[in-house]
Image 1 (cartoon, each protein chain N blue to C red):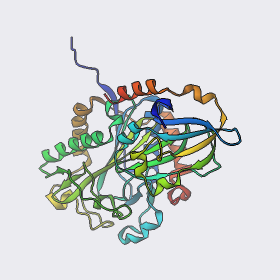
Image 2 (tube, chains in turn blue, orange; image 1 turned 135 degrees about the horizontal axis):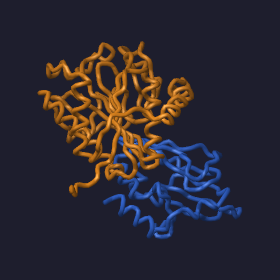
Image 3 (tube, chains in turn yellow, green; image 1 turned 180 degrees about the vertical axis):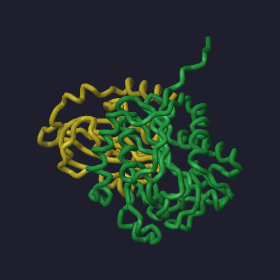
Amino acid sequence: MKQEELLYAKTHEWVHVDRDAAGEKIATVGISHFAVEALTDLVYIELPEVGRQVKAGESFGEVESVKAVSDLYSPVSGEIVDINGSLTMKLDQLHDDPYGAGWIVKIKLSDESALKNLLDYKAYQAQCAEEGH
Amino acid sequence: MSNAPARLPCRLIADAPAEGAWNMAVDEALLESAAASGRCSLRFYQWRQPTLSLGYFQSHAVRASHHASRACPLVRRQTGGGAILHDRELTYSLFIPQSHPLAVDSTRLYVVVHEAIQAVLQAHRVSATICANPHKVAKGEEPFLCFQRRAIGDMLSGTAKICGSAQRRRHGAVLQHGSLLFAQSGCAPELPGILELCGQPLTPAAVITAVAHELAGRLGFDFQPGELETDEFEAATGLLSRKYANPTWTERR
């Protein structure tokens, strides 16, 4: 996925919204390259169960690096319909391909209002520049 | 008139020894406070009895493999890493809000705090170095105890680890939690402390003010003695009963 076409949460998760075969809106969610770099050496990820309902801003998982445990926050509200189980064995995918093979969960949107709170690529880049100063 | 940049107010909390579950509940309440209200705090505390704290992701079943601490109470921390036997040591927890420049730089924050502690130890004639090149250990083969693991920034005296820390990030705020090993414990006899390694009998009183002084300059803090606010105390009380004193939480993995 092209970074320029994604939406971003202030907490560094990215979102790509598409429709599935049934016409439902599905948000694919991952974490940005900036976030992965800040986390440094990743050692463990805990993913949610498929079927869980999440609200925008709520923690849906956790990732551990050598020195820090960090929450992963859902940028949207809905039902978790898929998880990237391969990450538990190949955590390097988060680092090597954060916008492709490193996707984390897919969420069927129950409410699209949270999308309005997300940043576009340009605004997110500006936030990263400010945080990384 | 001074042109020096404004320093960030930071509470310095020196708590009396408490039960492990309460200590963990207070730490989470202060992290929530830093995230929600931007409060900055440095807390020092000890443990009423020798207590084993598991890293956030560690399996509770593995504690059985550590025979010397089997009779000790068990808690689970918010921070990652290996288990710590809290006995003849001093624990610190630092809470910084998202607005602080080091909130996004885990490694730098880790090193800055350890350098401050190192300066205090050296003033007490304790040999202390910062680990720069830890040997790699395969995933899943890390030692059970934090003080037997090595990571960049850990504090060593000779080859023995005397201070280790780990972080928890929440909504941009950071909790950094660490332990300074004053002396060997009978509940973890494989770990020598500063007393055995350097012959220096350190006390909390000798360390707390000095570390705060060192950190004030390095992190731009203006320390003021303080204690928990009412909302933080109430939050910790809730966390104690539903989480840290609850075996469902401690034994969840």
